[in-house]
Length: 366
Image 1 (cartoon, one colour):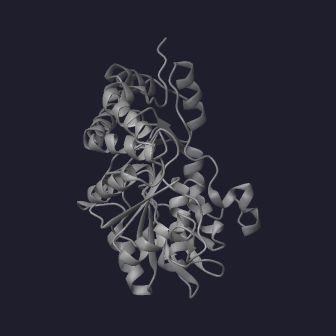
Image 2 (tube, one colour):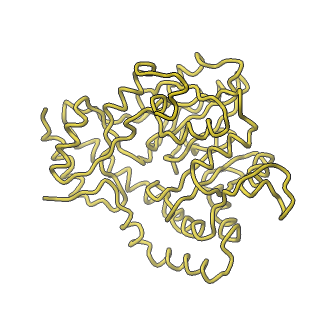
Image 3 (cartoon, helix red, strand yellow):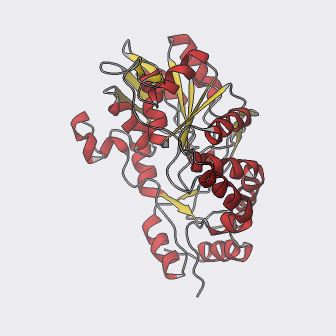
């Protein structure tokens, strides 16, 4: 029986081993490991890749979001609109700043339903935090129009959308900040925790630079209360290598997704949809079906590993019980939590394995 993992990082390393190892050795031999030339070079390259003016490397994707919200001066008493269907890090960044998350149902593309956003805007609303979930851009024209009409900030959660475009423009480049995770399994993944924030504002760039480094522009001169959240030299060097190959890595993921979309033919299953304005980079390939748990068990018996993203919506998470939400408050998000299943999709995935997954899914019956 075949054994197909949900994800594998080995092939990317094997393909680019010489470049990655040379970069790592260069850093080790340099004697400079924090906020040096490697970070500066990666920040320039990643900003240019996303058609942004500035990039600030930080410790993680969660720190990117948390510091972006803090950098805008948002906190207690402020409301920030977030999708009800997302990874909890999106919401943690809001509550870490003592702001209040205001949830909005997802649309048919799994992203925030922009038609429902205006309904929840109040005098306390200060920002919209759209998440380009699974690698597909949100409807940014509509979001930016609302932000302009109500004088709101926009912080884009791009943790899963490296290289994704809305109408030809990179995600992350629309709002005040675009926030990225480089967790190893991301489309652009580091070899440990890492993250970044991009912005077109010189003022916000300088503020974020201070926030990530103890609130300091120069050593021992602390202008604001900051934290220690710095992308290190080693991760920056390795990310620079992988960034050179991101376009080809993305095309490979899109080709695998195309095989799934063409090959899966099972009436129980709803395939993911791509919006006409979106260039989907398929961080995840997520299908939906009411018999999700049965299919997952069936595929596991056939040697195919899958994952559920995400089984508990943030508004029902135990840590947010104090917000007072209950089952049924966001039925679309709750239905997605019960029906979504992520199929194996990773760089280096063998085409025969893709075809085997398709064959097994098509043979599934309740």
